[in-house]
Each structure stands twice: as structure tokens, then as C-alpha cells.
Length: 189
Image (cartoon, rainbow, N blue to C red):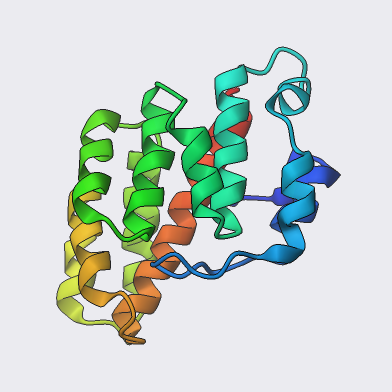
């Protein structure tokens, strides 16, 4: 299982990622203390570290950072302009959290099979196995070895706001998803 280390992204990004947040499945409350730092981020600056970074993936990193701090509108503004599977992925996550399940599913259909799905399936299954408080049927659903973003959207719809162990598990899986997608954008760019 891959371990995400914010320090590998440099001090400017690590400062935005630490301390670690466990986001709500819904929109959450915008972290106003991060707004100024987020507003100062420019994809062109991120594309320069390391030199030659793909500008669209740098933009995707920005969309992900805004989303991480619960600024859904700002994330949406960026992700809807990235016409790649990865841009659609960030866009889909934003709509899942909005919550707008139908729109989230539309964007996940545009994603297709993303490169992070395999690792995400493994991490989701591992999180479900180690979580003894959630329903056994929920854990079995993640044991298939394949990531199903549509099933996850439906599950988030079902458990959002319940305060249940199932909701906590879904939040942890969504956190793993965010890390994997951000790490992909940062390292593949």
C-alpha cells in the first residue's frame, strides 16, 4: 500500500496538507485559514517544481487542494476546465461531496478506468478489513479487488450525515482516494 507523504511536495504544499484533515462526505466548512495560501498558488508555479511538470496536472493539484480545504466552488471552477480523465475525476469528487450524485456519476463516466483505481481498490479493502465497527456487508463490498466509483457514490449518499461507523469508513476511503489522486497528479505531472 502506498503511503502519501506531504513533505515530498515541498514546503508550500506540505504547509497546506498538514495537519491532515478527514473531510466530511458532504461539502464541509471551508477552512478560511488556508484561503490566502490557496489563492497564492498558481499552476504555473507548481508546474515549475519539478521543471517540465504538465500544466494540466498542476491545475489538477490546485483543484485538489481547494477541495481538500472544503472550497468546493473554487475547486469546481478549476476542475471543470481540465478536459482529461483526471480533471473529470476531481470534478466528480467535488459533485459527490456537493452532494449531487447524478452529476458526480456523469463525471465519473467521463473518467473511465483511472490509473489510481487499482490502488484505491486495495486501500479501500484494507481499510474495510481493519474497521471492525462498520457493517460486515459493507466490508465485503470492498473485497472485490475492483474500484466501483458509482457504488461508492451511492454508499456516500446512504451514509452521509449519519455519524455511523459506515460513514467514518467512507470518509477514510475518500481520504485515501484524495491522497492517491493528488499523489498521481503531483508525481505524474
